[in-house]
Image 1 (tube, rainbow, N blue to C red):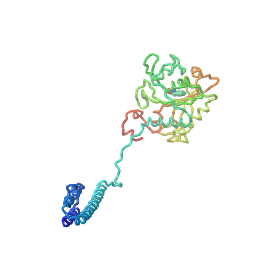
Image 2: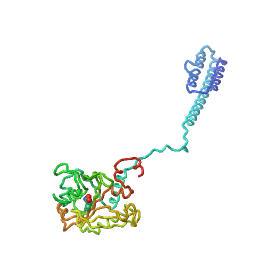
Image 3: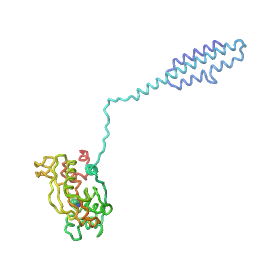
Image 4: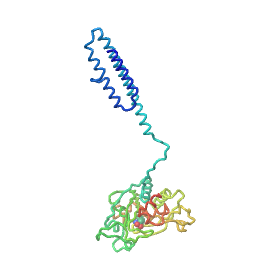
Length: 340
Ligand code: PHE
């Protein structure tokens, strides 16, 4: 029996030593030697035939053999595990010096970006951003802005009518009226959005384009406030050396009214391709809110005054980025868009 135990031990250790691969082979080996139907168990079953003197000796030896085999199996298991881990690490090795496969990131459309830039500047100056409807009443788009029926100013904005009283707004100025109807002064808002005019498409016109309206109403607001505010805005948008020029103009809803130019930020006023040799670029219309407009919104023009301005977002984008054809902004040609 001693010999059998010795033999089992030898065989098991030899087999273990030569075992190279799988964890499943190790498991099979474990079952074969230590399992319920294993070789060692078989030997122990024979112990009944031994003399009482032999029994403890063989029993102890059998236990020793079991312990030795168990320890050897455990050691082998650890070895296999370590081997598998090393193989996995080698297979999954990353070369961090390899050039990356760069994913192309999208970005905002230049028009959306300019709209954001504009709003950010005005937000930083304490303005709120509000929106108004694109489908608008004639009342807000014209009448409340001091443009009664048959007023010649209606002809300068070829308007898309939906019914006699409902139209696609031809300017963002109706938002002035809507704001003054809902809010008491002090008012300080800008309102960006789409406007519609029945214009033929060319390099500087589109039937759908974008404006940004501004409105400030409070006690004691003057043209000086308008100039100072626009100057701060222009310096932020076009650079700190930008100068402003006000030219007299007419809008029915402002009095006095002006068209406002900025000094060309490319040539600084010398004259170049961007400013068409002028040194100045027109960027917006503005003026002091007409008393009739204030009255129509139940704001007393003897107590309050205000200024308003309106600019074309496409125009600002074209000036800022040197785009010479407005249609490029709508065609979504990636070769164009990816430049921004
Ligand atoms: N609504 C005018 C336009 O579309 C611009 C403007 C706005 C002028 C506010 C003065 C004050 O031409």
